[in-house]
Structures are given as structure tokens and as C-alpha cells.
Length: 339
Image (cartoon, rainbow, N blue to C red; front, side):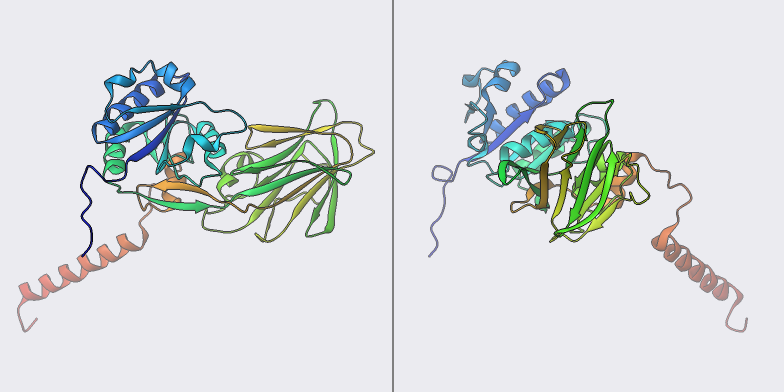
């Protein structure tokens, strides 16, 4: 006989709440989430500095508001034990949340208060239904491919990091071009004088990669992307390679200028002449919460405001066919059996 779980001994549910507290609308939405989730018996965990920005009185919330300090060396602590992280802001806030939750695999649910908000699942007007979905556990999560990055100087590993969207190698000084040679799967491909290079995931294909002229890749496709930025070369096309490939960018020793590497536009590493950057599929994906089963095509149309007027589609054609058949049958009945 299975043991009955009473409310008293049921596991405590926890949700991490991260917000762009520099915005008044984000603070208002964050307070609404805190009030509604705690009212349904869910503990809300906040970063201490964000809790201070929200000016909450923890004693006014039951079962409670938790706060946790976050430093560079203990970011995973914030998400430990949380069933998901609700992120209120734009894509930049979601990327910050991905950085903090990467080690725990906590799924991210973005509520978009920014402009495009490709990573967000809900919009400002969806707050009430989003809270209901969390309370009733009416959500799923999907894994998004990440990239792991290593930076070498000579044979020495200088640093390593990851990215959900992209890693970009860019010139450090506006007046100087960056001289690089790129390599794929251990073989040299081309040498470019350029403004930079973007190495992206399918998730990041609608971010910096998109602005640089790279292709839009559906999230379900497993691939890595490399896109040169303003390269002075005959062959300087966006490339899509296998997820098992290893991409490398070497800043030439003879270059007159240094470079800089950005991971998701958040973490930066200086690249002196001779630096080498290796990019490969990440060992740990990022999990994004999904509330709807809408296809990625619909997301593209909605986020970019793409014109689709005049589309009829297969379902519309089938509907017209059925209507025509029904009209034909009705006409036959009206004309009688000898018509």
C-alpha cells in the first residue's frame, strides 16, 4: 500500500525569482509573483540585493520569502533546490539567469518586459495565466544546446566558460582590424582581416548571429554556427557545421591589434596576439520552460512582426474543399434524384 502524502509532510516547493529591478514595471511584476506564489504555498527565493530593491517585508509572506547572497564563486547556490527560475525582464536578464543556474540545470521561465524577448515564454499580459501554470505545474521544459569555450595563450589554458547564445571574437580597437585564422575540426579554413567572428548556437541564431547576417536555425536542429563580421576576404560566408565539430579562432601573432572575447555579451576575456579560442558543443544544456506547444515559426512571426497576410495554408485549403463538397451535395439534393 502506498503511503499517503499529507500537506504537512509534502515537499516544500521553491521557485527562484530573478528580475531586472532597475525597471519599475519589472518590480511590480516581481511583487505580484511573490504575493501569488506564496499564497499558494510556494516559497519564493530572491537574491538579497533584488529583495532590497523590491522593498518586501518577508514577515508578510507565508510560507515565506528566502533571500540568498550571490557572488561570482557561488552562483549555483541561488538555484539549488528550486523547481524552476522565473525571470522577469528581457533576453539579457534571461542570459544572466542562465549563467547563474547553469550548474544546477534549473529550468528558466522568462516573462518578457524587453523588446523582442526571443528567450522568453510569456509576455507582460500573460502574468496571471503564467502564475496559474506554475501553481498547477502546467508546464514542460526543453533542452537547448550550449557551447563550451576555452581560451589559450600558447599552450596555457587561460580560462573556460560557456554560452547559450554565442561567443564573439571582436577587435578591441575600432581603428584596427583583427587578423585571424579560423579552423574547423583541426584543419585551417581561411584567414580573415575582419571586425570579428560570431560562433553561435541555434538558440543564438536570432541574436548577434542574426544581426551579423547569419542564418536563422530552428532550435530543434543540432548544429554550430560560425559567422564572420565584415571580413575582407573572397570567402567569408556564414557556416553551419555538425554539433560534433570543434571551431577554433586564432588571433595572429603578427596582428597590430588585440581582440576581446564576449560570452553571451556578459563575460569578457582579453585576447592578445597569439591567443586561441576553441568552441565546442557544451556538456550541459540550458533548460527553458514551455507553457505552449506553438511552433518556432509562429514565434518568429510574432517576435519579428513578419507579414503573413494572404496565407491560406493546407488547413484553409481543406476547409474550402469540404465547403465546396457540401455545397455540391446540397445542390444535388435540391435538384432531386433525376438531376
